[in-house]
Length: 350
Ligand code: SF4
Image 1 (cartoon, rainbow, N blue to C red):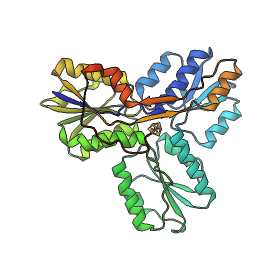
Image 2: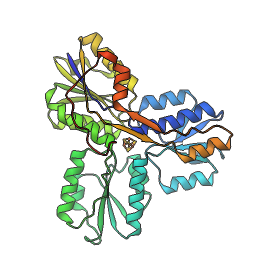
Image 3: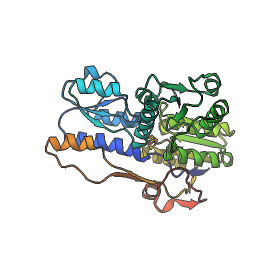
Image 4: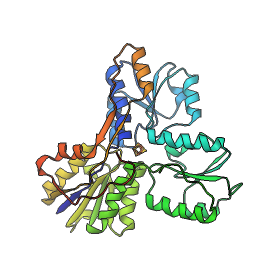
């Protein structure tokens, strides 16, 4: 078997920052840490934190007054913030800055009196949070059929926004319909689908037709992991999303000579390496790394975390949290990795 290992893959800077926030709080504070929703959409990450005593909940009213509450990377609505304030919770906001950017756009366009069409999955935590910024002005567009059917109050005053982790293919088709129906529709000032989503999808889109199978490591509630498998399937290559190595189906790999391995933005690298070790041991796999250099991103730790830690007399780190996809690969793969086929990372990478 020849394995093509996608690079970039796995943790984005937003996920790394959110995970770091919970990790530091649990290491430093002796009280229980509460997290609203899964900190990131990965079962292993959540299980590991639960084993350290972190409590994940959707019910703010059940959290003891005065506790530390972390908002997940997906962001929350003003209503959730208000509930946390009413219970006097010490809130730490681990929302990814690229999600916060979309919230800001929603607030700005709602104030300007525009009809906002939010392209995304209505039941996804990020969309629930963004929609909550202006529930009267925002309507969610989930599909091409929705885009064909939606009516707006004034076609000259309409804007679209998108969930950060959508398939660029799906979003593109929906936007094309909206532009045909509402030629004056405004686009967000910068791309809402984030750099990490774009880059991970770009690798799959470029290499799916060169392999027999695509394995995506990520949880079923991870939007961007599910999209990676869909993008491969849409190009005619069988794909399977797995939470970890135990879910590999030997029948799926039967007869596969070339396999692309990638991971969603919330999947830890050790899970990827377990899959690689399994493919080496059981399929005599050689590993080659698809090298898309340039994805390095750094996000600052949230000011709210500094506030909570310094109020307890703890030192607050100054540095941000960075993720460098090339470094991740070098550290894990060492000399065994063969870098080949440079492609250009897309999106707003640094
Ligand atoms: S996938 Fe994108 S928007 Fe979501 S946490 Fe990562 S960088 Fe932020």
